[in-house]
Length: 105
Image (tube, rainbow, N blue to C red):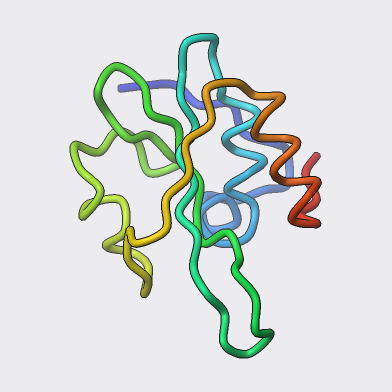
């Protein structure tokens, strides 16, 4: 089992819905890729980040652990993998977050 760094005060549910970017930043290792699933939010008429995960050693990784495929990653969510971004470095991901107005710790 993979050990994860967790921010004090955040729950697994927080990291899954609302603070996935913090989990990614806290658990990123050199050589990882960061995968962002975007979705269009009709309520605010904008594209938003739906979820972010780490891609490491052929597996998708988030607070739930390792997953083999995108379907498993998105099973928890009500959007698809139609709009996916990949970042090869943590600074590039942080720049994306800043441009999207998404706060992170």
